[in-house]
Length: 237
Length: 333
Image 1 (cartoon, chains in turn cyan, brown):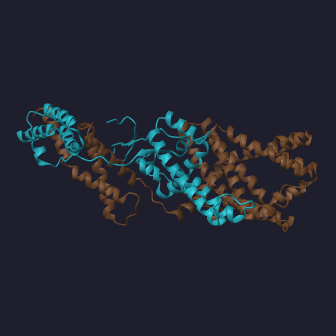
Image 2: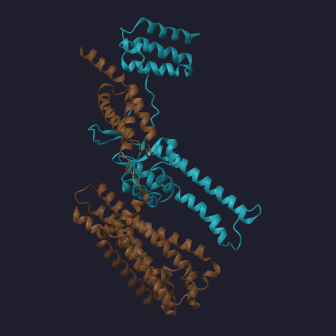
């Protein structure tokens, strides 16, 4: 479990908050998802509006396009494409569909939700981050800065952190385990093993169960050992 | 009791609290991003936060490489973010922005506005002088089509409304101006050099085009076209340059703070002014699309519109429209 990329944030409780900072990979994934969404939406709007405007099966601009062409066909897709990030981020205080899929959220450097000013500022600086093409400068900056931030984040005092909590707790409340003084680490491994047991092939089952049996504390009760051994035997069938 | 037995007992005691953690995480998820009027919820949330902090501290020592720690760290971070999410009242925030924040930024940026304006004016004069003295240099600043049109004795703005509808023209112009303005601000990131480039280039172009139209007896017509929207448009260009210069100066002379902190503070502060600039450019774009190319408006009307809009800009930026309170609040602070 690597927590070296965490950003420690001061808290009033005296216990710092460890924010798991997203790296260039997660950021790129979120960006590509968002890019795909806004591109598809923009193109879809353009095609539908152009077909409706032209009244036939053509999406090409007329020779003398009037205000209607520009206002209904050209401007909305441009607005969708260029205002996608600021509008989503301000409306949801730091989330876009891509970031949600990647399990990320924009947070301020104190760990709280960023303000509207910060969100707008980080979006304005996309002008710089997108240089020279395809966000090359922004990507490079996320690779070389300590908290993997682009220039817009530096300006706004924000960063992208993992915020999803898909970790499940082992069933510690199981009295049988706790009463047996089972080591907490072993309990976690056991719990995970039992959860993943149906997805493991027989070789993996044998190997893991034997390892646990070998490392299980001597004081673990016979009932537990018997269950593990039966699992191992079952896997060989 | 041996040390390992004691540690194991502490671990188990800690892990028996897992249901409390789950309840706290569930409450945080339920309240995250939502408004609640329930005081009991808010109190429980604060209690959860303290409880999670307490257990995070313990789990870091007792179970540093466990899923329990992962779970607790995430729950604690979520609770922290939810508790530190400032209340957002859009109406009050906007009022505060225009009444207090933007005037304060304008006050702070006064030297930058002065120098950005001086630089812009200097480049306008330089551009004018260059083309006035060496007319061929206009090719550096204007397109061949524009040059050919002026050499035929016409302004490129004539009959503009016959080609492009006002709505389209406005949208194109204001989009372009806003991008230039944002770019002048962002380019300050290059230690101010980018801002100097944008300001200088625009100043040179303006001066050069005025000199070129003057050589063909069209400078009065150009002034007539520009005056209604240009007063604010050019002012906003200088203001954006000032914001960019502040960003650049923050990087060059960070003072006691680190460069990153100084950059962030300057970008966030001057960014407020940029928001006002964008709004002003929308108005400017509408004037440039609907009034400037329309020959029905006399010069007197155009000047009146240009000056009025410029005075409106002054009032907006100084907070006079919303009851300026900066000095009062500073006095009471």
